[in-house]
Amino acid sequence: MRWTIHGERPLYDTPWVRLRSLDVEQPDGTRCDYHVVRLRDLAVVAAVDANDRVLMMWRHRFVTDTWAWELPMGLVEDGETPLAAAARELEEETGRRPGSLRPLVHAQPAAGITDSRHHVFRTDDATRVGEPTERNESDRLEWIPLSGLRALIADGQIVSSATLVGVMALLLGLEHGTAPEPPTP
Image 1 (tube, one colour):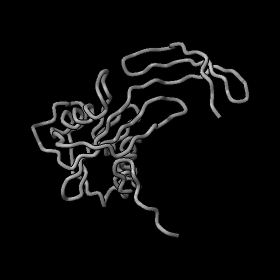
Image 2 (tube, rainbow, N blue to C red):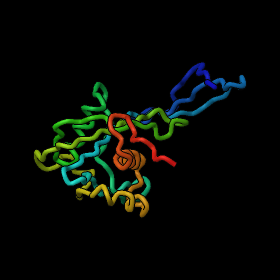
Image 3 (cartoon, rainbow, N blue to C red):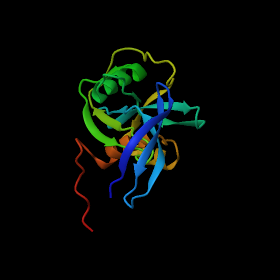
Image 4 (cartoon, rainbow, N blue to C red):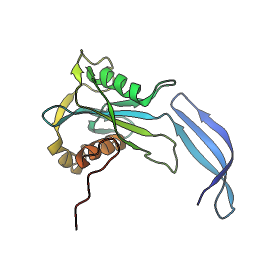
């Protein structure tokens, strides 16, 4: 079933958030006003080292007053590709530059209310090029063993949806959008 959009009007605009009112027609023919949050896409990086550890940041998110581990991430700027944004964010937030980046997984965290897409990339060859230049993101970086991620999720120490999608893709062994064969029942 497909909904039809007959029009869209702005309700609120900032560089980060655009709230829109959409005139939609539902499959049963009912028309209504539907509010949508238009957000920039997000680029996320899972930097994995030769010891099967992922680089994570201990962060405080003031909106939810939450402390948790997160992957380096940031908004895709105008005219920037998600790949370029991922490389930029990794270097700004961790002081590491990826030698290569490849798509790991992509997600739409709340497709019923927002159009934001989260593009998660993986690098296995990030090299340290200096100190992080973004001073407002995190003051604690750690290489977390992949084997410890499940416990951090269960303990509520990983709560960001973008980070959860990325680390779960690592744990599932996803590469370039392919999943391993499911176990035989």
